[in-house]
Image (cartoon, protein in one colour):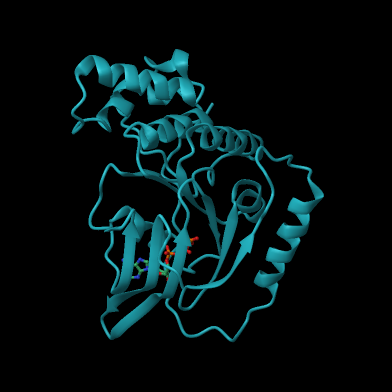
Length: 272
Ligand SMILES: Nc1ncnc2c1ncn2[C@@H]1O[C@H](COP(=O)(O)OP(=O)(O)OP(=O)(O)O)[C@@H](O)[C@H]1O
């Protein structure tokens, strides 16, 4: 495995302590991500996708192995790593502008520069006219746009997305996928997207990392090899999708014992 990636994971293991032993959630994760690349990570429930993303965010520490961003070890959260969760986590008592502004709390920019930066990012996600709106006035899709603006406003080195469209209806989801592709093309930001949705993974990703569970491992990495912007009805995308879906109907080996956690529910509830 070479170590010349912009974001490099090498031999990453993650174990959680249990009352009677420990649970191995990720095993031997090695991955080199190029600067500006869009990586999708797919896998069934419980294969450790979110845990992997939490390691990249710095919310969890690896039990062993290394995670390097631009040559430096990832330790703790940092504005150089922007994150967008499935539930947008906007503060209901702050308007859209202030929600995004909050992400710049530790920035060295002046107040005027911060406001200008916030407005530029709201424009980027198509919400130029909603700076003064309240979260309760936004649809689910609009809230996720605000969350994307907030994830980008610090000009991070990487953008990490954990099922960002998982709670949206199919049409809004498709629209936001296209928006995300446009933003990624315009900004050239290295992006890691975790999703359950294989169509979404192949539509957006330069490469798709297919994971398998118990413990979470990389099953294979699929090179999509299609230029952006892509056409949703491109038959090559469906071929890739079908090929990846086969992985989920043919387990490579019998699953090892694992403890399941109750499924998470999206905590956002605002839509109109
Ligand atoms: N803090 C923790 N303590 C103990 N076990 C944990 C912890 N966090 C995650 N796990 C376990 O790790 C495994 C992987 O969880 P993770 O949320 O990373 O999977 P996932 O692939 O993102 O699943 P989903 O798609 O359902 O969100 C699960 O079996 C879960 O129970």
